[in-house]
Length: 360
Image 1 (cartoon, rainbow, N blue to C red):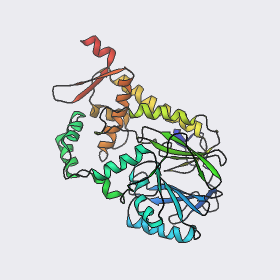
Image 2: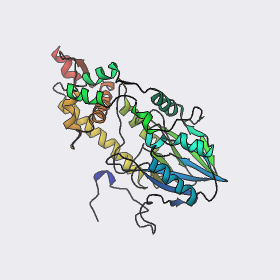
Image 3: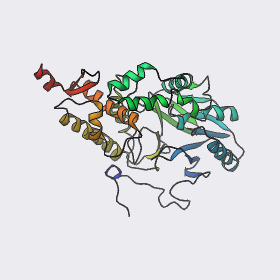
């Protein structure tokens, strides 16, 4: 048996010995509870590779949770799923946990294919619509300034300019112009099962998770993942966001769920052991915050903090890493523990508040 990562201690993967395999193969489905089918679709994101999607029996049809990315290959896989698993029944509704393209990308195509309404929170639907409509020929100067203040070199700025702006639109089919809003505490009746909406924040604006007491299942999307910590970042559209603060608060919404609830995440395998995973995620971020506090006895730019937070190569993911670093720094600013100031080069520096005040 391979050694488990610290974050997996206390987790059980109940389908590890399933006769059909520990997870469904491409174009196949695995039934995790009666009327609940697990699908996997490929995504070209290193380290993720697949996204999990969920078909829920819905009276005379199927409700779908998340859709996959817009690619011809995934559309072809879907056609095979329709033929093999829907049993002649239609998709009745699309429930998207959040706006990221691997979750929302095929919502427009599927809606047109099945005349199925889209169900989302307002924050997720509107943010996705905004990004779809925001494509511009050049990166806005406000975004350039945001990354300059984070310490990006001119070479990194030039590389960012070369990628253009508004690439979100290329990864989604046209997002439906109308939708059905879901909110915290809603109970969605699917077949004869009630699913409670639990809204998480931090990874995205209003991420919808679905919890069924009768099935003892939590569809967690990207809010709680078994092997990796969800990306929590800060970006130019909300430059002073306290994403990590929101995320840590959101985790408390899950602590009263049954300890043996079956968690169906968007990435990785279905698992039980939610309390252990939540405890690890809190500890993981606390350790990062503690490392920053120790280092910030002296002023640091965002670029200076990256080696403290990441022990792997981030050269191809500088914007993501910067977003995560800012999320941690902003959390500490919100707690009054550090201060931020612009240095002579126009780059933000961060330092412990007590030391910064003593130096004035």
